[in-house]
Image 1 (cartoon, rainbow, N blue to C red):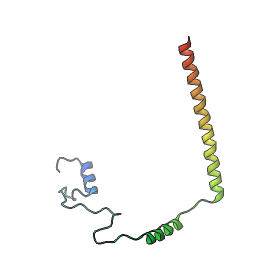
Image 2: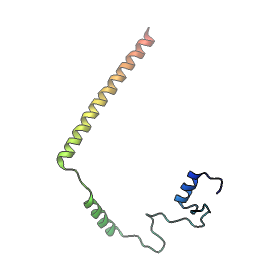
Image 3: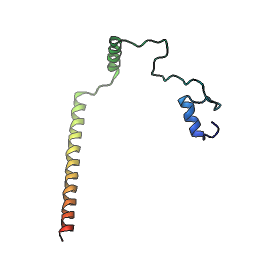
Image 4: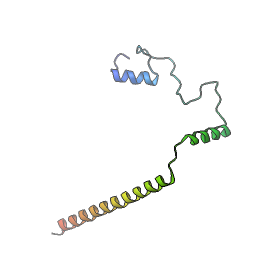
Length: 101
């Protein structure tokens, strides 16, 4: 592993291929979100309870905010569609005039 540059060594350490000294690791570390051997996975009911618990923590927007954001998105969509349509029309007219001579 001595032929790796500093950035490659850091990445290999982060991925668990080498230790702090740069020596190869025999066994890779487990990913944080994967169950370790011996740990059991939760069932569907427990999973849904945890999902509901996490969704309660979410900061949901108020109705007025959703309406305002939707209006902004629609206005920008109409403006960009119009601009692209005008550019398309302009370029097509220019190309037709160029080849029509």
